[in-house]
Amino acid sequence: MAQFEIAIASGWSVSATEEHQNIEVARDATIRTAIDRMLDAASGASSQVANCMIVGVDDDQERSFSITLSIIDYI
Image (cartoon, rainbow, N blue to C red; front, top):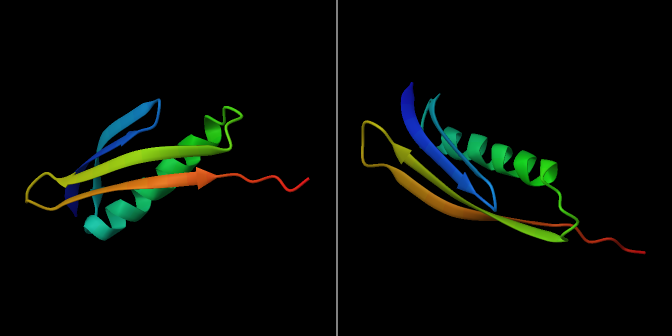
């Protein structure tokens, strides 16, 4: 297992050191966490963006990405 520093920001922030098999598994876990947090922080806005960064503790692996959650009500 490798260690990764995780950071997520979207009007709120989360940072942690987590162990995952590889950076792709860390990315999937970060996406799930970001979506859960965006849903929990639902502010009535129809769209939210979370900026994410993953950095390997023991190597040079790094991933940065954004997740956009849009909720469209068809009334």
